[in-house]
Length: 298
Image (cartoon, rainbow, N blue to C red):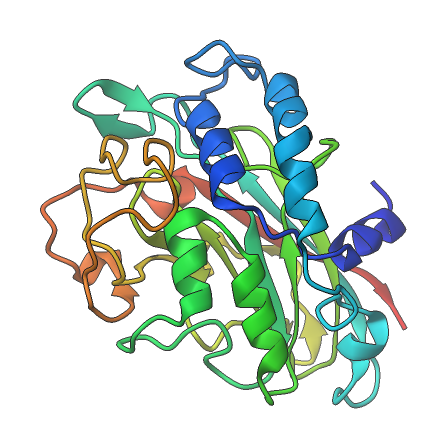
């Protein structure tokens, strides 16, 4: 895949994945492992993509907001950044398997949702730890919908540039990330820039993967970072919906009847390790792998 293709993908109109279509897609891929793309219901990835690309997706696309304010352009990425910039390729891969998550019904994989990213210099662009989640973060953490969070970042006066990743590499339409697949996007960044991103741990009520609120420094000792940054990610609890057993809760995205259907929790954002919910979650590196690679210099 070329850098131009990745860049065009990140600049595409932020897809407001509606509750019905996203819930249907997540339900189709919830039990997926390394079985050639077949879901528990027998639906293949290509069939799932065709279903998402049908009438329901068309209706959602017709209701999307104007894209110019929320699209990421190179000039926006460069604004406020002094001197030379570097283009980075970011790859987010789902490395879970059919046995990664233990449930009452046996092992299952952990799909990842479309997500949001931001290049910034100030802390707290996506969230603040030990504070209430924003409406945008709630929508991503509960229902895998990145659009509202991207829009909220665009309204901040923090000099951040943002976008969404929602289409797996090689796919023709937006959808969840199933085992063995990856999202990719490109960003431009100056020497003081940091990268933040967030994607939903789909087998949950409101958990998401993200780095600390400070983000990941894209330069170390003046040099662009290059390689695996998975160890910078944490599994966070948004604190917006009461946790149910991961992989089997009726109000989790793969099984809920619609978005925002669980019991409200009214808590703050904190690492799942600080939450005493009695459940066990897989290690971060058993579900997601993130790499950042410098692509070219300007």
